[in-house]
Image 1 (cartoon, rainbow, N blue to C red):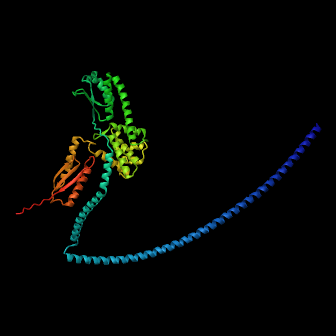
Image 2: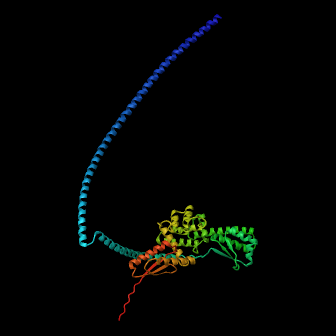
Image 3: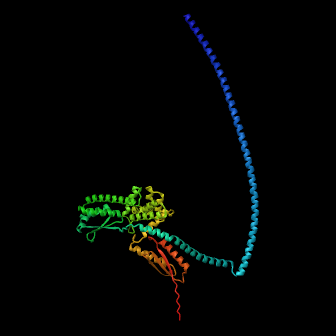
Length: 492
C-alpha cells in the first residue's frame, strides 16, 4: 500500500509540473500574441492616418480650386452687373429723349390738326367718319373685284383641265344602278297559296315574321305577298325562304325553320361572294376576311335608291382613275373609295354615323391610317388634308350626282325646291326666284335700282353660303343672280 501511494504521489507531482509548464507556455504565447496584435493595430492605425491625411490634402486642394473659380465668377458677375447698370442709365437717358420728342410731336400734330380743321371746315371726328366711309366703300368694291378676277383666272387655268380629267374618268366607268325600296314582292302561283302561308290560326305567318323579323302583308293584291322591312338582308332572307317553301309545297312551322336556316346560309355565302368579287374587281387582294364580309352586306343596302355596293365600287374605280391621271397612289385611292361607305353595312344595328362606324371598322381590321382618314373625311367630319381624301370626296360626289344615280322621294324633292326659293326670296330687293334644273340651280331676278354689279355678286355668294348651311343635297347647286335694266326712248 505504501509503494502504491508513493507511485501515485510521484505521478501527481509530475502532472502538476507539466501543468505548471503548460500554464507558463500559454502565458508566453498570450503575451507574444498581444504584442503582435498591438503592433498590427498600430501599423493599421498609422496607415489609416496616412490615408486620412492624404484625403484631407486632396480636399483642401479641391476646395482651393473651387474657391478660386467662385472668385472668378464673382468678378464676372460684378462686371456684368456694372454693365447692366450702365445700360440702364443709357436707356433711361434715351427714354427721356423719346419723351421729349413725343411731347414735341404731340404738340406739332395738335397744331396741324387744328390747322387742318380750320382749312377743311370739318372736325376731326367728321373727317375720320368720312374717310372711313370712303375707304370702306372702296375696299368692298376692290374686294369683290379681286375675288372675281381671281375666280376668272383660276377657272381659266383649272376648269378646262379638271373637266377633261373628270369627263374621261366618267366615260371609262359605267356601273349599273339598282333602284330598290323598303319592300319586296313575292309572286304566288295562285291566291290559294296565301291561305297556306297564313296557316291555321295564323301560325305559319307568325313563325315567318318571328324568324325573319319582316312584316308580311297579305292583302287583295292578286297572286302576291308583300314583304316590308328597312333591313334589306332580312327582307332578302324572308323572300328566299318563302320562295323555297312555295316550290317545296310543305308549309308548316318546323319546315319553315329548316328552310329559313338554309336561306340564311345561302345569303351569308352570297354576301361573302359579293364582298370578295368587289375587292377582286378593283384589284384589292389583301382585304381582311371580316371586312370583306361586311363589305358584301352593302349588296343589300341602298341609299337614295342607289345600291351602296355598286356605288362603292364605282367610287373606287373613279378615285383610282383620277389618281392615275394625277400621278398619285392608285391602289390607296381604290381601296379608300371601296371602303368609304362600309359603315352603312352596320349603321342600322349600331349607334353612330356611317362615317364613324366605317372608320372604326377599318381601324379595327388593320387598315392603314391613310385609308381610315379618307373614310372620316369624305363627308368633312375631319379636314381632307391628303390627295387621297380629296380624290375619294370627288369620286363620291361624281357617283352620287350624275344623272340617274340617285333619286329622292317626291316629298323631299318638293321640300328642297320650296326651301331654295324661300332662301332666295328672304332678301330685300328680289323680284322673282326660280328653282330650275331639278333643283340643281336657283335663278334670282333682282331689282336693278337696289342692286349694282358688286352687290349682285355679294348676294349670289350669300345665298350659296346659306344653302350650304341650311340644306342637305347631293352634288352641287348653282346660284345665278340676274340684274337687267331696260331704258326705252321714243324718237318722234
